Image (cartoon, rainbow, N blue to C red; front, side, top):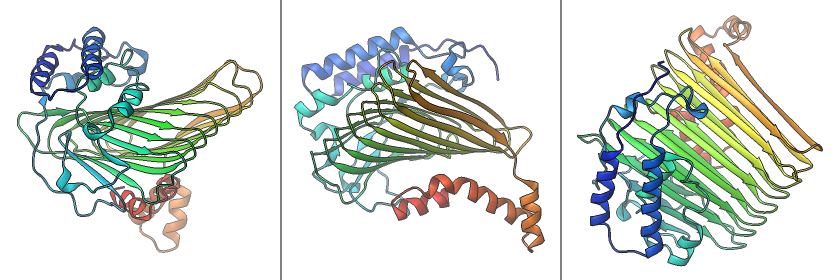
Length: 416
């Protein structure tokens, strides 16, 4: 993989931005100013290169060589096997499709959300001034998903947000946006699924806000086309005593990257788990950052990877413990199975600790399937290929089995 990267001409994105601004319906002044500021930040930042530490092992040349047009509305249908046990919001090429979506007071299209609610929360947690892809997404803010669970309300059914990219020529780019706000003492479960066909670019941003004492379960399933590029960021902000669990599953995409950023206040608990499985020439990049800003908080991370063929993967997990965050308890683990001599994994767990009364651990492992275990299974009459599949499933299901929704758990298992 070459170290140098060409400079991306951002003029095509600027042209798309100007064209979209003319067609966009009128809206509040603060939203127009937000978009304009975000586009200015994007043009100043440009796209990252491998010279930057956070992008050292992820080369964007293939993405940069493609001229993407802004995705347009398109008719399609919802895959019959997609699990929707509760309210379902469907977006096709970044556009909300009411005919495929269910009605629910707690969730809907961003354009239909209360203006005061949007102004208070939208783009307040995802920092577009530092991250070019977040800036690009924010510049094209339009339709998107919002979930709002009022204080002390328990959402009985999971909410499913589905993003579909359709086959098109020329290749298209969409900028999915999700805003999830669970207020004090409320409970909610939200799933995001990304699917598509052909060559396209998905640039997604999700903001999750957990109020004081709230409980949030969030899952992201990325099963994009093997010709697609998928770059997304998830930004989590937890108030005192809240509990957030976020799981990420990455199986698709030629180039796929997910960055997760969580900030914890006092007494919070945060769990980030994930599973990535790649083969062929796929490349997957996972970045996590858990910022313990206040004392008495706990975080748990377990990410697992399965690599085959000529695939490559990156895992960079960072735990930050601020000076005032005494009594922090943080654990981080990354485990990888490499099934091919040509597959490559770069893993880098990190701790940045500025407090002295803490308990923090981190570690990473890279290995192959246990030949003794395979021999044991074969001695019981199981052929080698079946034995390998059994061991791989056992490795992966430590993450999958934690999903509460039975239908979604089964769906992820089938996709694996």
